[in-house]
Length: 307
Image (cartoon, rainbow, N blue to C red):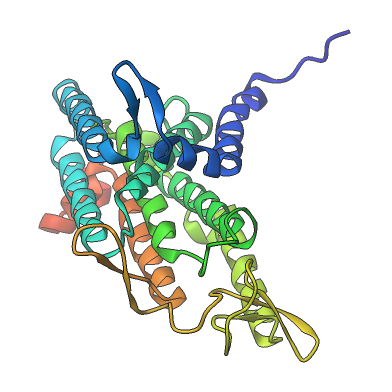
C-alpha cells in the first residue's frame, strides 16, 4: 500500500533538495568551473570566460525584468528596488569580491529564494518578503558555516561574512523576480502581524542567546592568538574553542584578491552582522503596499489611502 504524502509537503522537497545539493556539491561545482572541459575545438575552462557568461546571464535577466514591467504594475517601486539592488551589487563587486567566480552566489540564492517563495506564498497572496528573505539568508549562513568548519576547512581561513551578504543579495534578486511588478493584495494590507510575534523573531532570539552564551563561556571567540588548525577549532588550556578566523588579523583588513583592483575587504563579524541586518530590514520593506509608500512620501494617512 502506497503512503499518500500531502501535496504541500511534497513541494518542500524542491528547495530542500536544491539547497542540500548546492551545499554538498560546492567543491564539485567549483572544479567544473576551473578544470578544462572538452569542447568542439579542443578544451575550454569556463572560469576564463566567466565574465562573458555573467554578462549573458545579466542580459537574459534584464529582458525578463523588462517583460515583467510591461505586463505588470507597481512599476516605480519595483524599479527603485531593482536600482538599489544594483547599487549594492556594484559596491560588493568593488570592495567585497575575491574573484569573479563569486558572482555565482547571485543566481544560486536567487533560485533558492524563488523556490522558497513558491512554497511559502504559491499564489502571491501574502507577499511575505521578509520571511522569505530571512530564511534564505539563514540557509546561506548555514552553507558558509558548513564550508568553513568542514567542507573547505583546508583552505578556509575565516568564516566569510562577505559571502553572507552576497547570499542575501541573491535572495533579494529572487524575491524581486517573484514579486516584482505585482500589486500587494488587500489581504496583505490589512494584516497586523509583526516580526516580533513571528517564528523568525523567536529563531533570531534563540541564535543571539546561544551566541552570547558560548561567547561568554569562552567557547566561541573571533580570533586566536596564533594560527589554529583547519576548521577553526583550537585548544586553549585543554578546552576546545571555536574561532571565527583561523589566523589573527584577517577580519577588518584588506587582502590580496584577483578581481578588479586586486584587493578586497574582509568584513568583521560586527560589520557583517550590521550589514545583513540593515540590508535585510530595508529590502524586506519591498512588501509594503503602495498606500504605505504614499504615506511615507507625501504624508497621506495609509489607512485612508488603502481604502
